[in-house]
Amino acid sequence: MSKIIDVTVPLSVDLPVWPGDPAFHLEFTQRMGEGHPCNLSRLTLGSHTGTHVDAPYHFLADGATVEGLPLEILIGKARVVSVPVRDA
Image 1: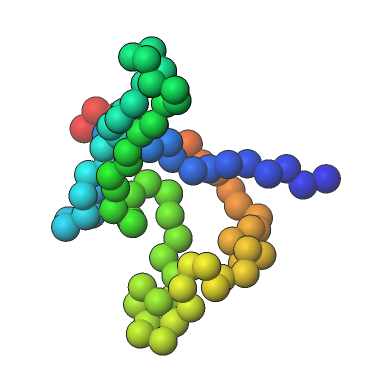
Image 2: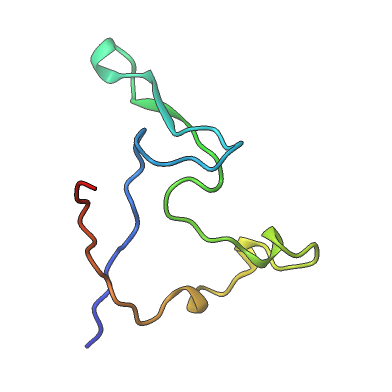
């Protein structure tokens, strides 16, 4: 039986940012605790923030865009390796 493991990186302000991309920012625009009927937020981030897929279109003018990629090509066997940070 296969096991599915989510290896995505959680979004946070500590993520590295590609030069020219906006940094990740989360702003709460409405909160129920402040009397609003629901919680709303605004996200600011570049398309290369965190775990993402570069579609062929990123490099090829006539390449497929992300929504045109079959999901099957994004699922496969993998090896997850822990690389702890250590002082230099």
